[in-house]
Image 1 (cartoon, rainbow, N blue to C red):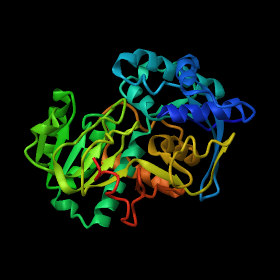
Image 2: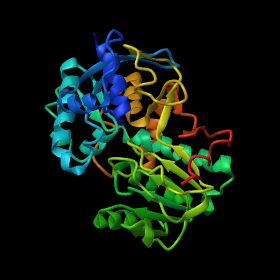
Image 3: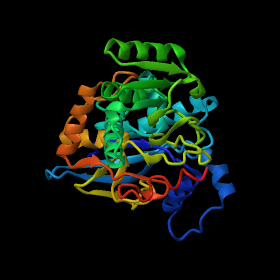
Length: 364
């Protein structure tokens, strides 16, 4: 079978890992207990778990594989970085052996590799993309849409980006900064923050940087959470009561205990395939745990869109190279094949009707 694309991902949670293992084991087996899953998952090598058939509204079709690296959800901390890079390498080798023409790196895989493409095995005729450019496109589209839904004038807003020096965070900054009155950039690396701030300053943007969210002098009313966190542990602290907040992390960034009464929260960076999407075996509801059909993370959709376009090239590589022009280019390719911004939702469900924007995050 010819393989046009491969998608490399990992379980976002133990529940997701359990569901994947249940499908692989088959319905004739009883589900494994949680403690047993936690014991065996670190010993499962990366492997393809299903075929993926993607369709385009143009009639084009592409065949692919979903390869699970089986990075345990409790091993996303920096102490496991070498082990996790080895897993991504092994998953990449799987894709190369399968003859995939282009490979998208999903979730933590793209974070691990975005500045370390030399860690990947010899690639022959297979190209790799982090998928981060399309992720940025969907985040920016989502911010604009949510601001419009909430009646928030983005041109008079202050934007906070958490994880601003990563590939996704810096790409969002370049795309959105010219539209806003002020930008607050937060990340752990001060030197990278200074370089990004200088770049935006040169374009006439008012920028403030901090490694501690409590250090900012202004309240943000638009927030993008794109930090490389191992678990939902981020607490934003002081933001405007009417803020629009995009959690674009994988795993999610925001702690369930974050108090943001009145804020409108949505999960960002997601697209929807309208030309047809099929998993064999059927992993719907497992690989895409969303309240809408055929919704996939932008990082994975980038490789799919490029395969449908027959453009087998490393569209997104490195860190800090995403520009508005490149975002527009990949958005155009995706849209041509019927891949669009997914309907907005958060932990309480759809938000576009306004009923669930605030409920989840007003409880604390």
